[in-house]
Length: 104
Image 1 (cartoon, one colour):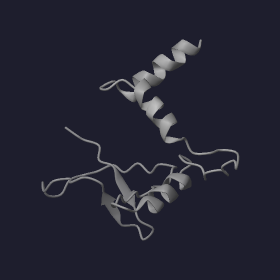
Image 2 (cartoon, helix red, strand yellow):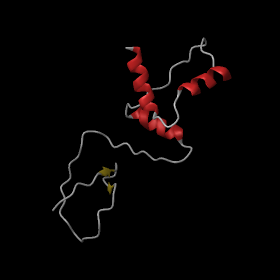
Image 3 (cartoon, one colour):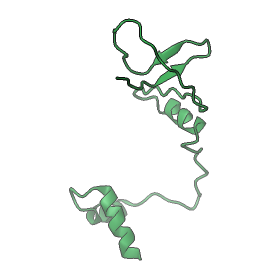
Image 4 (tube, one colour):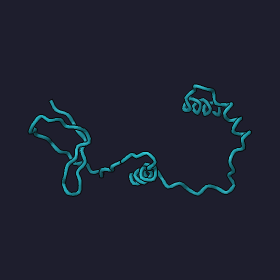
């Protein structure tokens, strides 16, 4: 029996498995090196800047663009009206799907 374990190869050649391998003594292993670089993501509370930088580095996020000066925040009345349109207990994804279906 075999299993696949994800690992990261450090620049000095050290191989670090991303999950526990177990203490079964010496075992044979096959190593497949992927073309894509490893992107270590360290999630720490309040460290949104590091997460954003990592996501941008792998192309999963873009730098935010300029916000138009013509945009203004919603008024309290407009926010209240918006909240009234959102049914309690309905997932936001479902609300968006239904709203899109009404537009077509």
